[in-house]
Length: 444
Image 1 (tube, rainbow, N blue to C red):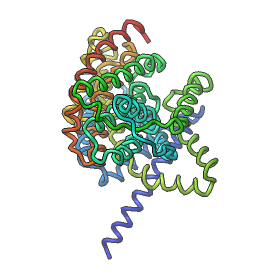
Image 2: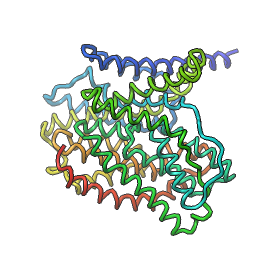
Image 3: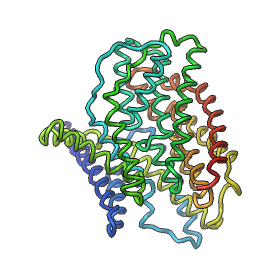
Image 4: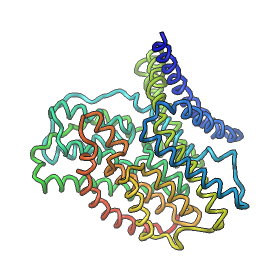
């Protein structure tokens, strides 16, 4: 009789976790209302409580990283306490709150109906480009779900997917992180560099994402595998809603709510637009059931990613306080932060990713060592985008490579290894892009 009771308790814990995440996201949005900003700490506390309750369900890899982040953060806090720096204890737990709330809001996009229809596969270079475009444009909004939508259809078309098909899934999704406002990478970039201009980032990010596709086409042709590549036929119908939503976000950001951060706008519009679409297509009863299922399963299983971002936010805050207390508020790792210094940071973060740590760890440390108040924010944000996009594709322990490995039964180390040459080529492009960006936009 004890075993069923345990399972029931575990189920109740997951259900409470799901609704806790939803509540924390709702409170975060309420905190945006003038006069209610104090609610942000309530939102943060709910998120932390959910992650603490979900600790037994967090995977071992993330547990090790979270313990490392919190441990280093506590050591930094201890050193900060030895100085005269003011410690905002109430806000120590709010690091990366905006990112965590955005991840909550964006998760609702997974409820979008799959409008892709069975079509004949496209082969050759056209197949590579069609598959890339499908994953990138869908993934730019619905994130990881796009990989499985496209990947499952490729598996049916090809029986056993090739290394090139698997590589395209990874590269197309991660390269969307260079420009999509619905991606965690952009959320992180705008968090560590709040004065960065998003349209400037997109002006550089979209071309480099296109170049990433062109490089893959060139690589496959050089290896002589293009002719045998079976690709996914792009569906314009399936891209309609993501494109409309992206346009809405930009309109709200620049014209309707210019004083609200783009992360908060994404957090608001994502669930509102999806719920509206569900109501119109399926009616209130079916929509309520879909939302309840989403809370019970998707939101309840977000503790892995949410806890990692919360811990990284704590690290960033405490390390920043320690450095400020011991070295002064004007201290920075570099006297001048230009293209060369930015590239050094990029290489360091990618190196950390190769060691198995999430790029957010390196980005958090960079934001502590290079205060945004003293540097070109657009350049600082772009370093974050580049290191995230390339670092997650070449790391055997990144979320995308582990997800594809588990879903399609391939070795995650071989999957990452296949992307190392791509990563080296992209690093050359990143160096050029950083130089161009620092020249065109010398200050933010």
